[in-house]
Length: 592
Image 1 (cartoon, rainbow, N blue to C red):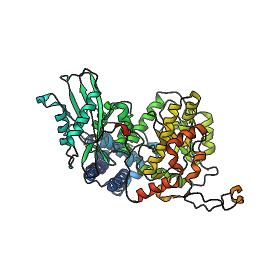
Image 2: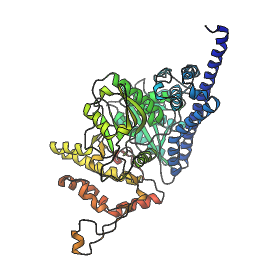
Image 3: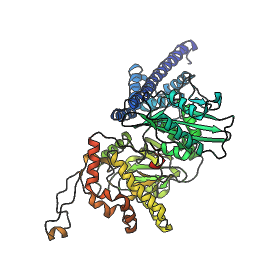
């Protein structure tokens, strides 16, 4: 017997209204999150102007947890008001349909969709992770989205005969950094000379001459960055100008970064996220990708502090790539790690890292410690030397795309971390990082080719990476060549985190003199060794094994083999000093 339409309609209307209320509650949670996100960017500007670098570091750490806190608040609020959302999973398609119209004229629709997914995925079972229930595909286009103010400002040096230097001065004034300049006349002259040198000669100002800059500066560590592009005729020049502070808290322009490659290093996946106040993040990301078209959109979102949106875009890119490729996942090149099982898709730019079930000796850690070490890196300033990591749970991939040997290794070595569901393998927990060439393989290739200039650069960079990390209060622990990678810009980055620790937790010691001939011959150390003791004199014997390469390495970095080097770094850290680590060579800096 069929139910009467008159009885069904009120039930249906009540269900639609309930779905709409849940949708509005989720969007209210997102709006609160993004309001706090923008407030953090404004606070970063204030901290820059007051030179409060310790507070800037704390703000950066706090912002990383901000998203998860707001998601949990929204989940709790939804389940408190609508407990049926947890039991009636069939309600969620209606919630999603009610959510979409709310994003009409919204300034951050793609972020709001991701927030919806985060809330829904905490409530729903994984079998509902499909487009009917969540935003597997975006529902709102953002290509031409604009806010009340444009994402970037345009300046015309020819207009009114103002000239290039006056235009640059106006750009700086519009950013309203509330500190005096050390010598603005000198800095503008430096920028103008550097800018003119980048355009082919003879250079003539075309009617199209203009400078476009993002509407908000980007803040990170102790610097503010003005990012934009200069256009003259058919020539376009992406650029960034770092604004730093002197010891007297006076501003100065440190250099002019130009071209995609120099900006890619500035926006590297091995650096901390920027603070930037964006009304329409999609417009900022679109502008930045005009300057750096080779940088994936996912990484661009992460660079401006929207790491959860970056994860969403990355996950979509991964599955899109799987649909348009045919190669298999294979074990990543290099020496196998004792903690992580690492594999890659050769046609894709990333590696996938799954924690093994058991760690072979001499590794003496557990899974919880490994998770804690990776969390440490996520919250720390990566100073261009630590690879950013995307952490995922319940990643389903087509099992047919796994090399049989790799699949067997996963079943044998990481059985507790995988599940086979039909034609899919589900990775319960996985870290994903940019793929780099292991430094040991890079050096072997250089030795085979006899390219000692390339080897010298890599070995010097290797030592510089260790020193940069030490200055940032990071002791890598296992500093073997195999645990460092070489980026496409030939920078050395550390990526093996299971033995990482804070410099201030280490005790750097000299090896005591042997007391007797028997001490010298003893197989075991004749001196006491505490759990946090480190003996830098031992580094030379295992960091670089090849004698000729070791000689090159020690030419610049012999100080790494002394406890005094490490103790001096510790003293500076404990004194509250934050070392300057520039995303460009010292040679590029303007003379002051």
